[in-house]
Image (cartoon, rainbow, N blue to C red):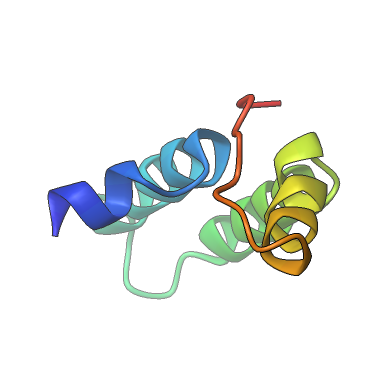
Length: 68
């Protein structure tokens, strides 16, 4: 499982891990976590890596992640 996660875009993995850790320590109905989630998704989907993934798939090659 770790190898699969490590092969993903580092920005997405890092942000997802951070969000998960905040959620684990939050109250059950903590609306701030959902606000954090929206901010994280915005950063991930507007990143260079978000463009690289589909481009690499279309070009039938492995993605070259930059973490940006």
